[in-house]
Length: 482
Image (cartoon, rainbow, N blue to C red; front, top):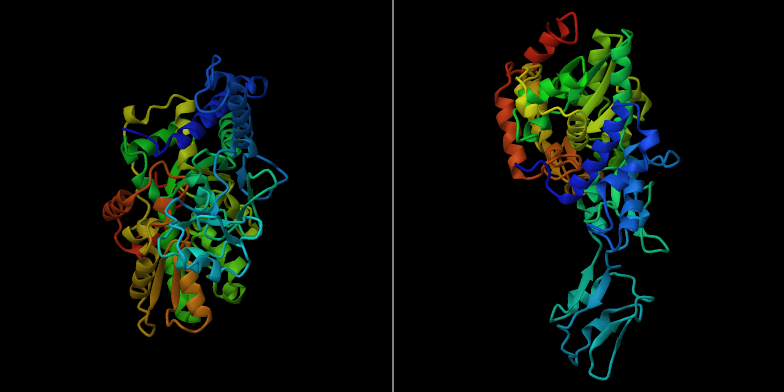
């Protein structure tokens, strides 16, 4: 069974695997230059014009796998030399143009960008075109089409433009680190920084002394990943890597649902705080609603806070589908609880860097959370959990009117309506990725099947009520039941 959706993901994985394998052996820095040579041996290129460019790009991928550009605060980076194959884009006249006499395209263009040749066929002057799309809308033959690069199409916050060399450029003031461009770039020229070396360092140091233990906090969307193995085998695999224990982030989601439902009943209107990319979108595009963002931290941070409360020696690594989590851990309110972040892509590389075949392992139990905590992984799950939280706490004097936003476009509409008093919604659940966390850029696989797997996983929860899961965790002496 395939482990990845695309060959770009597989290429990224191979670089991460090689970097991690050398790091485990303390041989990384003396062997850095060997990685591109190993992945592209001989003199025959596999995907670029020549082996030299291919190896140069791989060298840049190695840098990103080692943490990327330290001077760039964004966790999303562009590998400039890999970004050279996409058309510039913009509006173009296709051969469907019939040279009609109406010239509606010329009439509607306010910038004088459209001219005609001797056959009346339209042409667009790129130096004058503002890409408003008016000409495309009025053409009776739909002969004028707008073309954008995949990264620009994927970016719903318009953070991507082209630099003077026509390579992608990210505006950090607009970027929300959702990673949509990372997943959609056909050449892998846009990627997320990896903290895999930090995680390896934490594990290695924990083995050499008894000062701290490393806990893995795993997102509930893990239930839709690693489909070639069983979830219990993934948990055992994490322990084989050196993690002291594995905790469900869904437990933190239960805690969030309990607190956020109470907070909502008191404040009467809330914007969810679970998705860091959505929170960033609100802060950058709707500052008028910034004060309405829930004061309850995300499930990742809540779980990590719980773990460190039970075990002050703990170091916590969050493992999930989200590139924006790598940005979230830089926030002071979160940095004190979460020490590093891995995506599922990076976890696969970590397994293989130590030759851990999870399909050959026995299963370990992962049962810290309720059904409601686990369904946070898909769009609508948070709203369902808040509804349950209100009911379990006996809050009957508040009527929940949620709107669950599937992707940034729906988030934009819901926030705009609320800011203009055109919506009576009192709880906006925002998910930057389509489908929710199950559609995150760091997932191994994407698709509708992921949502079904999350719901199935939720039904397997030992504790079906939120309060049961929270109370069980609160009443144990340690972060892990022995």
